[in-house]
Length: 453
Ligand code: BES
Ligand code: ZN
Image (cartoon, rainbow, N blue to C red):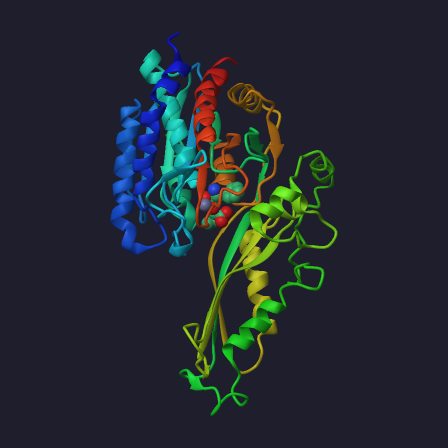
């Protein structure tokens, strides 16, 4: 066998230049002004997947395109692996909080700073380069491979759900491998064991016909901002339990898992340093439990009244909040959206009109551990990092993961490459050069390990 790992090391400077190019395209899925950038990113990535040796097509959707690359050369006896990732990124704002511009990648202290570096362009590109390494050194791959890259993960994967249903024969596989999660500590290879689900709502509160003079009318007309603040304040009690009736009905207490969590190293000091905040949350649970096995209610955005320079005495006509709920097994996003909507209408004060919109949702997920997929990953990742793999939960969501298991009936492996404090969705997002390099080695080795069985 030609020197697979030598090829990766020798070509790493080029891989990094290509990643920089990938990171320079502002593929922000949430904003319509970036539709041409999304198309450009999809075309660029499809070309790189072709260079790597995959038969690649761009599949149009009602939203941003899906890219599908296939290698079927390993034959019927070899397993088929589906690698999933996303080429869309979160909006980069607030821009003035970035040390270097979000779409001009810069390396500082061994970290590649750019929007999308860790979420998820860098993590996805690791797999594309590992495939290239096999194809260029051996002319083949030891497993059949499908690479599925979508452009709508950050906005709820709405068009990917029907796509996998409609293409389930083409996407049939034995394993799904995803790098879009984190690591427990810098340089510690980590397999993710759970993801939270999500229910995302928008609450609109309308009061007077137009903004009013707050002296001429204030006190005699209910202020929509005050009404919204009161509504939001009813979501938690003093112990930071969520007070929406029925909210916890389907929550699995996961007592077994909770006991195992006690063995997972959770870096409390690092957590406080990375966040610049105290550890505060639901009474009776520690931070690891609050993040991995407990649901949340979170205000993601608030809008009302005058927020410009100086003072303006105004009684705003409207207020709006974006509120999302992270969910755990066995909560159902639609059911939670319904419970919350009912609760909000119940507590809304008289004098305003309240409308609740259900934007999108996703199911929670828990890994079924112990299969040969995880054994192979332990060997591949263990070799790349030179130390044992750690298993850990995840607080974030990847809505398509439970759907892969349901529709394709294949187990999912989360090989996360995001180190704590990587500023996902925030200014100064980064991926470490080390994780990019070791991730590429681990991916290349994983295909070998999976072929051995
Ligand atoms: N890569 C993240 C998911 C993630 C974040 C996993 C942190 C583990 C830890 C992904 O790109 C993401 O941000 N997902 C969204 C999903 C939502 C838009 C439905 C999320 O979690 O907010
Ligand atoms: Zn994300």
